[in-house]
Image (tube, rainbow, N blue to C red; front, side):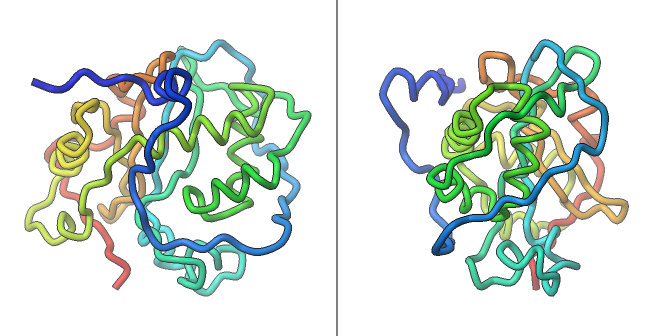
Length: 235
């Protein structure tokens, strides 16, 4: 029987904070953090929010072909730390589509950016996720980043290095490993994104409006259970 779990958002309101869930190598840059201008890449969709997706990117696969690109130096060069799963973004969901590109009046504070750069080690990505997705959840960019960090810090991450060495690894194995490490999750609450060659790109964790884990719909769930999956270790 799985333990009863309280949403980390609720836990923060009740107790004032939660414990750091995982530690990994990461350094924060000195000085001011500059955010680029974000240009919408699609139409504005302002609609009721029915749930959320926390997208976790597998950094070794992302960096596989980007180690020498200056714009990805913080995440991929190794000079700022070593990253496994990172937060791509927290996305609101709608009934038939998803909200995006709502009105933005403010940018995140320097303090919140600094606290988020080990969760999402790319200031440009933080700016993009707030502008495209967070703006449809709240008018406060700092509240958006704090909510994302609360969900992130509530997670326990499996040993994906060990999992990557398993023969015949499938999508079901990857989902089950995450669910086994996180009592609140069942495998059907863990979506996957793999590339055309079967390498893991992302996990898509599905939440309801109350920020409690819920079953993923077909769009977010991804490959079938018996689909073979490979995990790049960055070697």
